[in-house]
Amino acid sequence: MEGFSEALSHELRQFNILVKIIEPGVIKTDFYGRSMVKTEREGDDLCGAFGLYGEWADSIMKRLMAFGNTGITPEKAAPVIFKAASSKSRRMRYSIGADARFLLFLRRMFPLRFLQWILQRVV
Image (cartoon, rainbow, N blue to C red; front, side):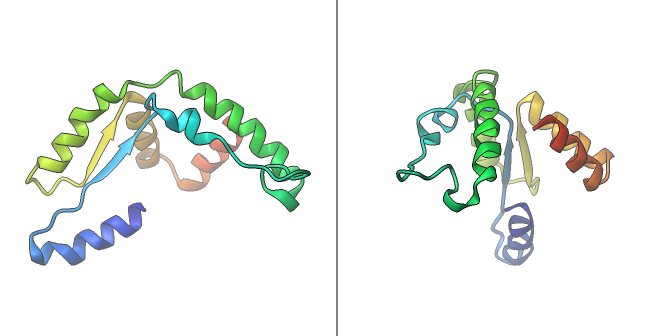
């Protein structure tokens, strides 16, 4: 989405249309609750025929659900989203939350391969 948004921004600039990217951290919403409910057919795991992938995905989902309680409230995120939507500046990126700012800092400081290696160990 980020690459698409950057490309779209270049194309729409001539029409004075601004593209904004919201880069949120963990926000306490239904994303970590009701919206994560998955449908399973009898005998299927998370991804059906992928076997072990389902076990891995289930363990990731448990950790992801725990993150949902650590985030900021939507009320604290809303002003940043409003600012991005209403700003006439050419600023493209708006991060929400200390966790998002930290990850964006790491992306600027370290090569992608190193960050992927870290994420594999954490997740």
